[in-house]
Length: 376
Ligand code: MRU
Image 1 (spheres, rainbow, N blue to C red):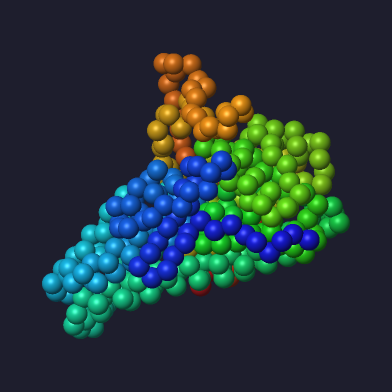
Image 2 (image 1 turned 180 degrees about the vertical axis):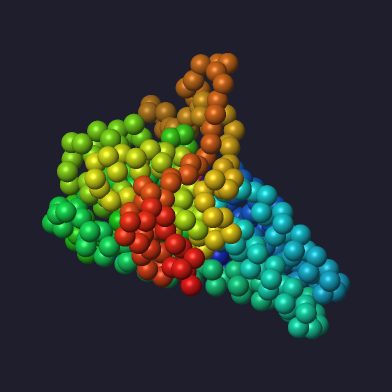
């Protein structure tokens, strides 16, 4: 059995927010203060904070600490001033990263709440600020609960749908664990549940080039919790499935799921779905229902973020002789670089979409999910 410890990437008490700088992991554990929306935006854009749920939560909490500090210092002279600050900050936070819908979902819900409070006759700045602070704080609680439910539903689904229940290994991609959420995780939460139920033989995680969320973060979480696990690089996935029949499911997270089930997730997810289909194993997407974007009918509409070239042509590590962190160039000078952060996996390649509300599957004979019906 594993220990009960899980990592945390967000430390919050009212008025104080610190985030774990995930660029420094696994070599160093550095918590950095987030004092305002500018810090929150920068933490997300530079990927010190990353993972769809964590992006939304840190954005919301950065707004909460910023607005709370301004309130304490009596900086808002009127309800209108507080409203303008809150709404313009939400617009600004939305410009940090484009693909994960959770941030846009949160910003939309907060803007609706602010407008409603004004319409209902908010008298003082605190009548707007405190409900936003409370809503941001509630996200920390709700996200962990959602992830626990995802873990439970996903583990049950896998155990009931694999060929051999007594020999279940899984492969996961990117990082979807405690570091990508308020705690526990989505796809990695399912791995945790399988492990804690003694239903998991082994977890494999991909390196997840170019940012190495798998080798730096998921491997770190798996080792931290003593879950039996092995790292592979992305190009080894098909060979693993051919040679190791215990790997009966690939489990990934999501940044945005369209109404038909097409799923944007970390670059490399699509090729994993193709190899899962070829080898006849489950391909599971795990995400909170806030990752489902019913305004998009298919994945064609999803905006895919492109990241800077330096992320692909360099790698960061520690020197073996003196343990000093360093970044080295690994690609030829002058080469062109294409660095999309995400890809879209077509719904026909996905076996099931696991949310906190339960497991969405396709109707017999259908290639698309009906997530509108699932959520209604
Ligand atoms: O670029 P990242 O590290 O933010 O990408 C993260 C992913 O693609 C995750 O799979 C997704 O956000 C879900 S995290 C629970």
